Image 1 (cartoon, rainbow, N blue to C red):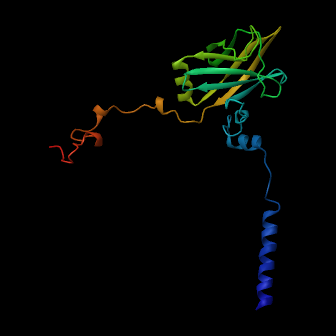
Image 2: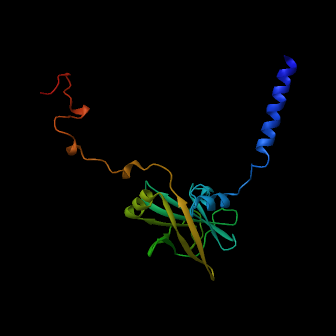
Image 3: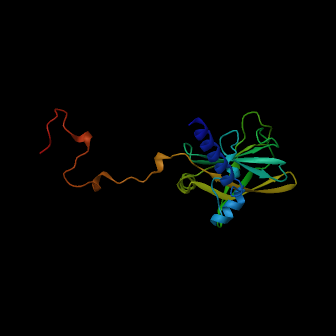
Length: 198
């Protein structure tokens, strides 16, 4: 019986090897996207690379500079940090503003907001406090746009592909309490003595 068992296991292994051989084929993400008909795969973005402030990175030029795009829900601000080649170190510049294309013909101008210790007339942080812009971006969950900045004599433009995956409870639409069915009181309105309302 041992020989029979050994023979059966050998046949099974051989069948598995032959069955998997010629049919297994490696495909790149681009090939899979083409086969599925995807023109935009949200799992295969450069937006996965986060900057030092947790935002999405943008290449400027031949990686001469980088920018980091951050949506700050608490301060209702859209922020751009200018970074060096390493995409980590702040790189203050003499520009007073940067422009973020929000898609379509919409754009936002972010003003210089120098960080402590940055030289006179230079900034690596640019900011726009605008509750509506931030609300719209968080509701959409992404920003596919452009970043334009003048650094010295050279104008740079980079593609923004930022995705905002965090929850933002402050912006969720909730049904008003008045729309609840008649006779249904919220738990907080039950009398303290435990008696049921009539």
